[in-house]
Amino acid sequence: MHLDVQDLRNFYYRSTLGRAVQKTVREQITSLWPEAKGQTVAGYGFAVPFLRPYLRDSRRTIALMPAPQGVIRWPQDMPSVSVLCEETFWPVETGHIDKLILVHGLETSERPSALLEECWRVLGPGGSVLFVVPNRAGLWSRSDRTPFGYGRPYSQSQLESQLKAHHFLPERHVTTLFQPPSDKRFWRKTAGMWEKLGGKLSMVAAGGVLIVQASKRVHAPSGPGLRETVRKPLGVLNPRPEAKPV
Image (cartoon, rainbow, N blue to C red; front, side, top):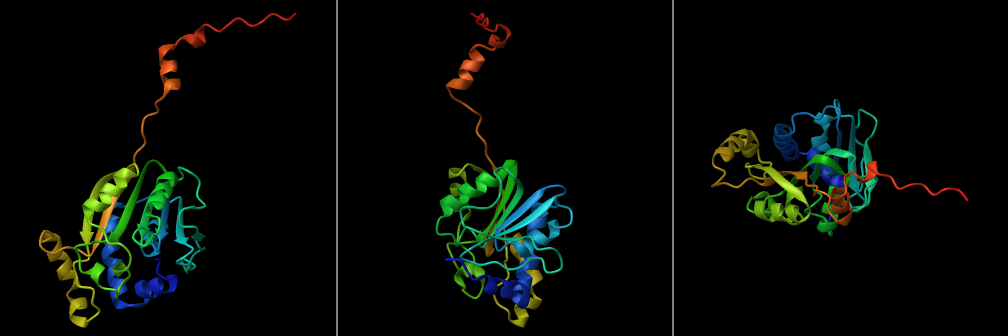
């Protein structure tokens, strides 16, 4: 079940906890993708808080928002790049996207397999995708005070197995949001400390959000047509004689 877009906007832009999440997760995303100069970047779900670093240098930025969630105008200070779309039928050409980010999209989808197929379709050869999902072992998936408490949380092995089954190659993964999902003043003031400690003690304290980077896997073409071409590579040099006119 998708969350309402107004609730997501209020969390990320109007709450102290949401702004902390935006800052922490964005830092991890930009460490994986430092730039996207001349590339087409898309986000699906509610990825707009994490697309802004790519607005200036990317060739094009697209914010895809599923119909059950709703859409908002974004960014407010520039021409809008938001697009309302069907969950598994995006108005994007096949192989058109260089970088794709999914936030609050996969875990809330009622058809995750079809959604992954659509992700694979729109990515170009060598395209890269980031899946940002609630970590099953973290505290954030157990609290419904944040958007990460809704939908299906994932473990790393669960998510990577699902990606491999849909022709993605997992490459890197990170966990983040080691701070508790609380807006109390003490936790907000010590959030940076928890993130630093969590990164060092990740085997003991699980982060609330899992980020997996994967690439589009394209199989080499095969079939009788290819074998026939290889079997007679010089056939083009011996064209059949043309029929003489009667």
